[in-house]
Length: 72
Image (cartoon, rainbow, N blue to C red; front, side):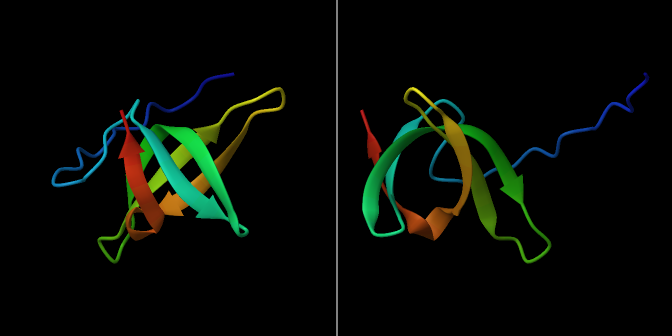
C-alpha cells in the first residue's frame, strides 16, 4: 500500500512541547502522561495527544487549558 505523506504544520506559541511530561484531570482523577503530538484546530485552539503509560497504555486528546502543569 502507498500512503500520501502529510505535511505537518509548525505550531508556535504553545506552552508545552513534544516529549514533555504533564499532569491533567481525566474523569475526576489526576493523570500523568507524555505529550506525543500537537494539533491546531480551525478555531486556533491547541490540542495535545498525550500518551498515558502503564501496563496498558492509551492516548487521550486534551486541550491546552485542561493541562494543570508540566512535571520536570
